[in-house]
Length: 612
Image 1 (cartoon, rainbow, N blue to C red):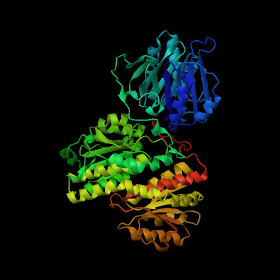
Image 2: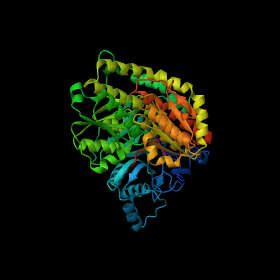
Image 3: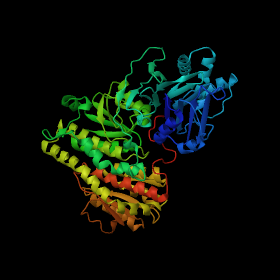
Image 4: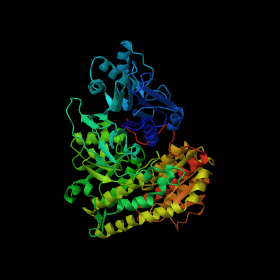
């Protein structure tokens, strides 16, 4: 979950590295550092600068002049060792020759540390990464060339890694290796880049080389060479990425999260373009690589995701059951492969990930495929690991999402599930008329999201009141329960207030004991066949002194069951949860702003979870 950047070329490396790390900071922001090679300086052939905290703290620590046109950088999300300068990357070998940055986890690092310590190597950090620098240096000292030394060192490592290695005595290149953690190369004009993702280098090039697991690359200003651990050449060519610098700027918003929430009307409309088939009342999903006959053979759907993607998966399962009448359920991908799951050929497995690099989800893909199952993906990042490994899928086309708390991408996931449910339903028993009804509902969603956003002032007022509470409940029933879970997740991860989601019907089975004037409840209360029961539950909360903020539809009579109401336009009942989720995004955002928290980069979290 760390961010890696590297540069080889004619420019001074330090500014390029710092800019890249700033773009990658959503991947980790506990500490940061860079190493720059300068063969023209016999006194300081390399310089390493590291700092605890944000990239801006690193930038403040840089000397006025840091010359050198080759370098590597890193922004860290701590796994081994507390956030500190000594645990920050890059790490340097015992002889000062080798510098390493790393994303991933080295599972056998305790054994490697013990072996190095027994050989007299003094380890100066608590990290797993430091061992790599020492291992490479030992291979170099034994007479191996730079590329061979990196290959030999990596053979000792068990775990996941994206590595970038610099050698003082080979100051014209950076050697990289990938296994299980994202890494790509950027191809410029007489210069080359290394990065965890394209956001770090988009200002310099739109041509990227996507590395696969097991790939090594030797990168110089003139180009690159990719190879395997067995020294076999691998043919990797550049592709063009559809990403601009402007998409990664705030664009007048105070935070990226706010920007991304407000981008949803336009981005959802873009996602739907060309995917709605009026002639047959269905969805066009050619990327699934499944024709109607193949789609029809699936008698069950299993959805796998992590965190918010898992909650959206629960919402998706409800849509699939409603529209396709196929049993569907969602499960955390992080638990799936560890219970030795039974993989059925008649089950369609669907994995969900914004980044396409979520480690637990990627491992779930491989577990399904290893046992002969069919797995498709709902992924936002084109060319990501999951997108390349699944049997087919639906690209979300949400555009870049920088804020750690996902909003825009999750709405696109919900819409993606609606499209999948529509396609599955129309090859079964969903009528043409119902297919047209769902299509009309989907077409209405962008404008209806805009209507919700137009009420932001009232939402901000409600959020400020909720922010004063030390704890709160989010509740909902059936389709509303995943909305409640996602709402609680958003609230807790950026406000640091305790928020817990319950099925509304479960309140009287225990949680009602916690209701008091100090514990408000956000209740998802759509105008569906469970409205009366939801109102009754809200009245039970009010009778015990609890405040209720109701997210509901226009025209719903709540009486004294709610202290505040937030209205969302009505759509088709199967699609209503998509719109009901939007207010919870703004509630979390404005509560965090009211509390003065760092909205885009909440503590202890990172955007892309690329380690187990």
